[in-house]
Image 1 (cartoon, rainbow, N blue to C red):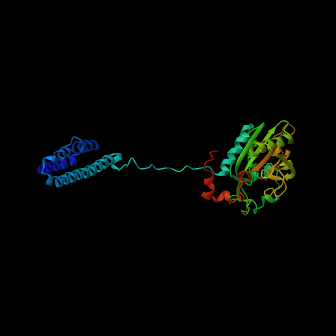
Image 2: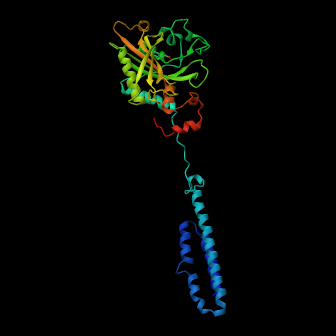
Image 3: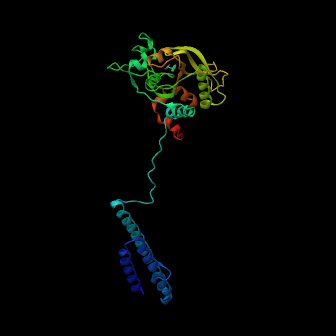
Length: 344
Ligand code: PHE
């Protein structure tokens, strides 16, 4: 019987080593360790031995069993690895390994707000127009009725390039480009970057964004302008948000105004954000100056129009409660990650 056991283990060893795949290993396992295996048969035959020899032989069967189990385990790992290694051009592929997760990007808060603004105006029937960031004196100043000695033309305020062109200081340049190319009726917005030689502080940045709006048609009045502004304010900030205009001056509009909305934080009661005035400044506005129409060959006896320019940073800061404009340009991931879920 001892000899039989030794032979059994030798046979098992060579059968196990011959296994090529997990299936072979399973079959050999059943053959040598299963209920009807020879090894179990030997257990049953323990009784045939004299009682004093039984414990020692019993131990030997158990050891043989353990050895066969260990060999099966080792062979099983080996054939599985071999199977993985032959996939994907020989590279080991562990199918149980967690996949590579790619982290999802998000939109910058200024992009989210710009798209929201676009949507509001698109819903009112406006189209989106674009113009270049590098402009000339004509589109940034002359055609906008801005005299040669106007302070904004100063080198200290506007970034001039070596060839005499400049980085546009306002999106009003796009008004000119649109009126140059298309006859009225015109109803466009133009979102984009602007540049001014301002020192960065909580409410200034040398690069910032505006949305220009321009409507030119027969019979356009100041009431159309205020109505468009109040529509915008209530869609963007909530139905209870009011708006107003105050007299101001811009060379390319007459009359000119500054636009305010009622404070979105305190509802007009007065708080730190609105400096206790109850109102928040949104941008400049006005009726297109007849001089601008004249330059572009539009008859101001037939057509009138309004224009306004909104600050996108200002709107983003109010919507997201951002206290300092510089935060929008630092690209600190701790800030940007907070907007990851926003898909607009
Ligand atoms: N372009 C002006 C500014 O940057 C704003 C404005 C736009 C004013 C359109 C009137 C009409 O301050």
